[in-house]
Length: 371
Ligand SMILES: O=C(O)C(=O)C[C@]1(C(=O)O)C=C[C@@H](O)C=C1
Image 1 (cartoon, rainbow, N blue to C red):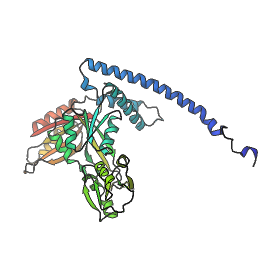
Image 2 (image 1 turned 135 degrees about the horizontal axis):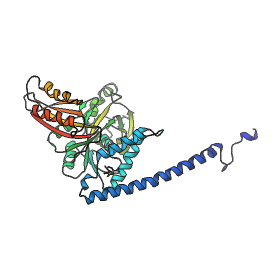
Image 3 (image 1 turned 135 degrees about the vertical axis):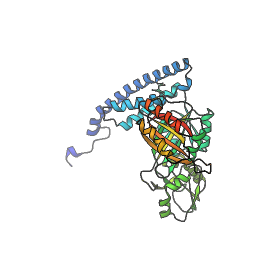
Image 4 (image 1 turned 180 degrees about the horizontal axis):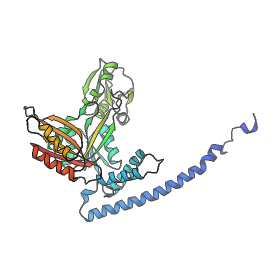
């Protein structure tokens, strides 16, 4: 073997190590600067917290419109190559940690640990929060209304299965407002304690998840009984104890409950997504790019829906969602769940809402929030 082909002796730097060393030193020095700046930012946020306390605005620690504005501005100014998506993810955590220094945020959602709602909640509010997993959507609304949690995260619609009806019904009577929205890719997995399907007689999941995977289940396990669970993560919790049960849930639930994946990505629609609403007791100020959600009931007469849409068009307000739910009066009456672009304080939106108020039998504004 020629001399220059010999492997380096132990302890001798390779060419690669020599090339990496100055680059890594540069990264270390940049990280030190980032940390200094993060500490300064955290101290500034603590001063904001003191000022809010001084003005008795303790319940205004969370300012969704300000958080949205910060992330939008940074993405707009982003020189690259750090990706815009990473800007959002990193600053969500920076703001979460700073907010946590002002005052801890308690976030309620449908649990247990490992649920998609938990993932949506942490993606939205960051990891520096206190989690309050609940056993139903009703409980999420109740604990936020009672002040046991500051905010909640609830699913409202899925791209395969449509509306999450219980959430829509709860909005009808709840005083809570929508503070924000988040869309999450929903990738379902089949999981068991052993990692095999031997001895498994039934598959458990939330009815929405069973519906989102019904084609795959019919093709692969047509004889398996299907049982509803309160949530997918709850099904995973049951499967961890019961070898006759396979659960359908997200990968996070397998990790949380120590299960093994039998199959991944089993949802019938590969683009399956769920939209979640962040809910709380306060109103959100305009952020510059907002949405407003409303519930309307219309008089039961010909042309009522058409008449309702006219003021929106007249004021140039775009509608991004239109959903109906039976009003359960036995009269074929419906509630309409409508999302429009803009904040309720915007002139065009407030004029359109006033015009709707004159035409609707019932109107409830669920909130304006950053789009
Ligand atoms: O600007 C504020 O009101 C803050 O409390 C600071 C801060 C931040 O870290 O930037 C933290 C929490 C709020 O939700 C918004 C922004």
